[in-house]
Image 1 (cartoon, rainbow, N blue to C red):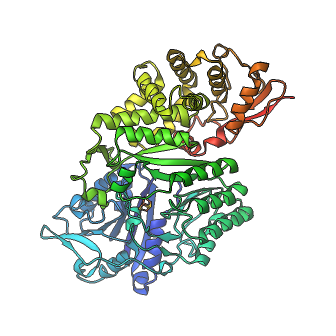
Image 2 (image 1 turned 60 degrees about the vertical axis):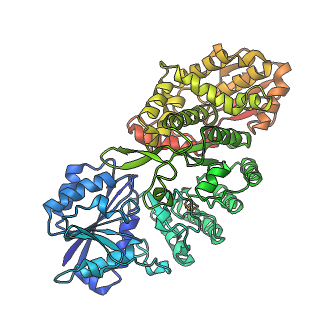
Image 3 (image 1 turned 135 degrees about the vertical axis):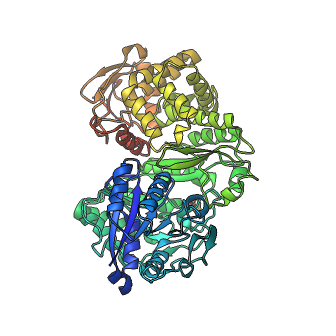
Length: 631
Ligand code: SF4
């Protein structure tokens, strides 16, 4: 009997190792493979796995075959493990799969290594063929379609393997009982493929291609399995959740499952970019059942020239505004995603895009750095588009960060990130949410100029922890890190909350914004409405910040405020416009900060807490305080 080890080094703790499940389930259909192999699944969190003990464990497995699943977040770790494993177990065969290595064998395989191959497509069939061939007395890699390997120092590619059209050919590892209990989150696929061809994307190695589906009965049975197994969080890995009408039915099934088993309670996904109405319908269904979710709206850019350059078409601006209005009126959390810097985008078009989004009522805007991914159309056009990249390696993962394009120099690129951080603090975190809207509406200062002004102001505030964090993130390109934005939230809304508020107060005073009463009132409301990310952060108000409103602490999480009669109507109108409160009576209002927050977990790592903070960033409305009149 041969031993086959499948190794998955993921991003999160206690996440179901789906890749290993699929590979084993498919391969085991073949009676010959079933009787020839004993399978071992090895999974760990890439950033936490101890190298020495992981290597020792793999060596001790004495496996004849090691299969690694490779992504940007684990590729450096895998590379080092493979190097040491190959020298410790020279007779073992090693296969690497995943988007990071497909068609990239020359980057990851030593030409003298005869026993290492790279899988160039969907893994299930190729892995089964590979295992079958390895049972031969003299295995011949050239007989396995879909791989690359070296022979006598020369790279050999075997013919491409076609995609699986009938995904049900892969037996369900969940329903076969292949996973033990104890997992809390799971990646879930209902289909594979994306009909679009955005030049920066390599989703599942199947962009610009047909969408193949798992059958409905199987999907529903797997959803039930999640419920029974107590899976708390499901990440739907489809490229466009909500693109197919049946996704609505599956959402109903998630609800039934939650009602029966109290799980899953949270769903995350990438929404279909051209079906916002159906995605909203899905969110309504989930929200009505108290399943935690948030609607992503992926635009990537608002600039037509950029969208043309990257081969992408977004929904029309009017449709976007309609979706935003609908989401706000239904109380559904959402966030809009952009990528910076995409080719074609200039610093000013990027800034204008963010300003426009704020003007259109976007609640949260997340800007992802542009990572140049191998195998994408963009990667092949790197020179033509003037993409300059810097490689970030931390011994575990590796990212090629785009820092300049034909339109944007490196300093412009970093300045764009500085502008984003500025918007992040004032708009996403609600540092000056009401005041900024007023300044923009009245033409005193538009969003674009305000965010630019605050970005420049922060650059000169070296004593502020918040500004230091931003400076450091920009200098070291740490904005690429998974928990960077979450750490900033932790800092501003918890650890350095007072100094963050002082920073904003200083900026507002220096800018002379408060010389009219309306601006002053809105600024004071902004101070009182600044959300808390943890339920255990002490509630506080700085009396020095208030000249119009008289606030006082009324309870552990609630404030009581008095508004003088001449300002009452204006205050009520502003709060109603932002759907914060419907009315004020007698100039009194109670502000309650007890929402969906959890307490700060001191015993957990900063990464753990930052992950939680990031989770609330995409549902900012769920941490905004509620306001009710005090009769
Ligand atoms: S970005 Fe989204 S829509 Fe575009 S190719 Fe990738 S998965 Fe498809």
